[in-house]
Length: 178
Image 1: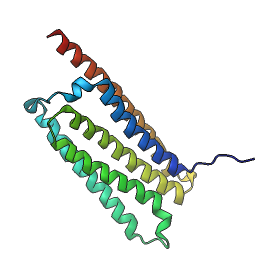
Image 2: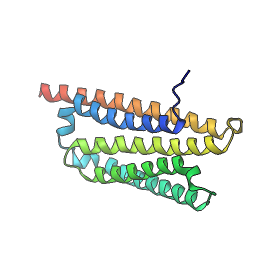
Image 3: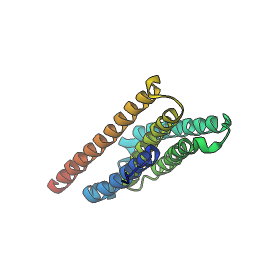
Image 4: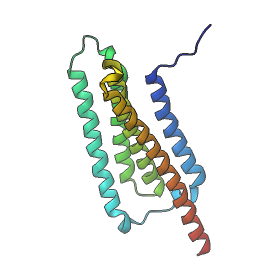
């Protein structure tokens, strides 16, 4: 009897990829008019600056964590491959999020920046979860803490998508009434 076995790391990577693809696809499908409009530069200035600072700080954190894990010099770096993968995804997502936040041609870029920020946060939580799950027992509590963090971040990301869909729908109704 064969039982389908999927590793935790593969499941977490699939979760991140599914979130990224579905969030962008839903945003484009449901909020096309909103995302293709030009953002108000004066109203959004503080938001953009806050987002840029946050994303760069988290990118620095991801890179620092990645460097620390590599410098620990485990006997075989393969032991850390899943953790390194998740922190690499987090770092890449944060940098692309920063670049997207600078492109203020359409609201689409701000939306992509937010989705990539959430993707990076999920990847950081997955990285810690994979690390502590592989090297510490569940009774330690660290793995449970990061499992809870991962759940909270995923639910928060889904709520942000729900909120976006409401905002884009309201915006389209206002534009149609003008």
